[in-house]
Amino acid sequence: MTRHLPTRRLLLIAAALLGSAGLHGRAQAQNDYPDKPIKLVVGYSAGGPTDILARVFAQDIGTALGQSVIVENKPGANGNIATEYVQRAAPDGYTLVVNTISHNVNPLLQPERVKYDPVKDFTPVSMVAVLPQLIVVAGDSPYRTLGDLVKKAQSGPSAVSYGTAGVGGSAHLAAALLEQRTKTKMNHIPFKGNAPALTEVMAGRVDFMFFPMVGVSDFVASGRIRILATTTAQRHPDYPQVPTTAELGFKGFEDYAQPIGFIAPAGLPAPIAAKLDTAIAAALAKPAMQAKLKSLGAEVKHLGPAAYRQWLGEDRARWAQLIQSAGIKGE
Image (cartoon, rainbow, N blue to C red):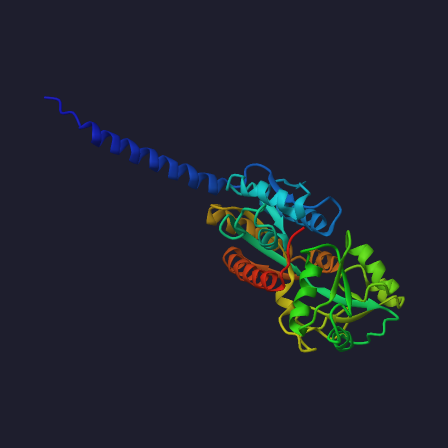
């Protein structure tokens, strides 16, 4: 006599077989990764520092993984268009965003427009560098030291002015941090970019600004600007005579440096994240890559997936506290 299995039992067996096939398929996909081109999305226009770094890394990562790595620019909304594009992508390792400070700061400055969670909605893959800044004044400025500048700022509200590339950018946030640490209120003058802000500083119409550590050496050599301090943890080898903010009594500025890293959509399998990080770390270890980073004003700082996730969480908390206490609002 033929015995028939109950329908419920047949369904359970079928589900188990399908689940096993699905797990095998996902494992095989991870083992075969990558088997098609990888896309690096940049939230800024071609030719800028982030774009240049992405293209340099793309070549080395592609060589290490044996696949093409394509850079795609999606500028706009201070990097938010690119970030949300990657947030919506499949978590398969074929779409990454090259993140900057805006990844953590945008949701804090514009919570009504930016809805993603910078940690929960993404898989951090690899951090490669930070971008410290210089505090600069005109070459003929009466402020010979950072102490001179702070003393003037403490004499009254808006006694000192500072320029930035716009509201909520790294220079603005760094100056807001300086205001908090010195218990002063300075006059913020935003411009459409760092270059016009620096022009006004050199002309003496704006007292100072925080400027990226690239593109100022000629101005320093010609005497058009003077560096009062660096936000690096140690004195910078290019400016060994310039003290750090920590040396001058303002510790912690080095923790607020802008990061450069690679981030994937949430749910990226750990083996793929590890494979990507290994390729990125190998590129980062090359002397040519380190020289390129230095030429763009960056300091090498590598963190893998787990460490980068922790760093992003801590960084978000730092900016949240500063933005709230300083009352900074997005444009």
